[in-house]
Image (cartoon, rainbow over all chains, first blue to last red; front, side, top):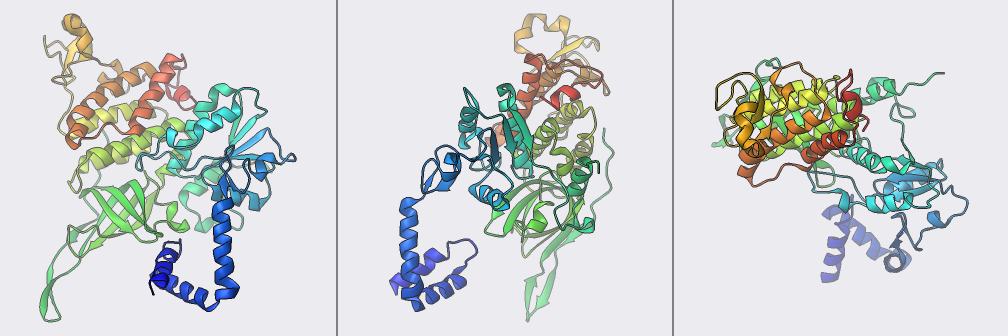
Length: 196
Length: 286
């Protein structure tokens, strides 16, 4: 039973799974040993060997540089800065951005002791400097105190580069009802109103 | 000085009751006004929120579902909330439920200077104040600062708030008269030993060892340039570090150091000129 206990313990460490749901998942895997457990084990082993972090943008891919950084059809003059790889994936799902990305790996946080040197800000500055074709940096950090502090910090560091720095708009989400929005979102939406 | 706000929403209760034939402690419970100082993830869904409450000082509690999309907007540092705290024993972390009162963070996020001042104020309180020690005046001053940060003269207000914070913590600067001669005019330095003002004349032999006193701190409505604001933060920073943070073995928080650097950078790069709008128009966009 040691093997099953270990499997349950490891599964319980996954996000969204507690000890009970991990036990259910382990039992299900054992029941579907050939159709699910072995292919999953193979896929996990292959992914662990193949997935690497892109040395240019910080994305996760099997190639370094990643497929986004090497895609000739993408606009090399635009870089969208995101906090985590999950944010990059979200923007890719939306399919509205055809530039390249830069993953910071987190945000500045005094509470957690995260400083500029813990993020990939130096790599971002290096991508912008020299003969770089980059003309615009889009800051897509989260609308939190830490996210915006990081955005302002990057803006200050980029001030002398001559690159245009923009940020995502903030306001009413698609399908959002004003009655259910918080005060902050409503006031941000009012400030960013547009002429029709 | 900011207006003092009324007493807490309601008082806490801790009573003994009989249950299942034995004496058991009824849960501790209180309600109070609070300002969110910091939020730390706890597990997958929860968050440990540190509040500055009016009646109970800096107080933490577990907010269930604190990482949910619905709660994240409210749980931003600087937002004002009405908190209800419950625990079985007083020394427990306890569970907190929060109701939003004012979203200050959202109003300040777009402006780098104001956001830096907000982060600096909150991190100073979170680092420097002992837990569960009531400081109603500090709560009221911080609440007033959060409103004032939206105004044009936010930088001067912030600098004066730090002077006030020192006073509330018992290390107030005495800027009323020269410590050496007693004169009340031409006060331009502060003694790092006593925190008392020193006139230009009396300071002459010791000038190198004294801290410059920016003139705007002596008149409540005066505006200031970036250089004077930097001087003010170095002055209060010296006493905050020495008297408040050293006791806890902590340095000045990073957010506070970043704000001081902003003022210094604005002063040294020549963007620190003071126009009609004071330092505000420059610092907001630097």
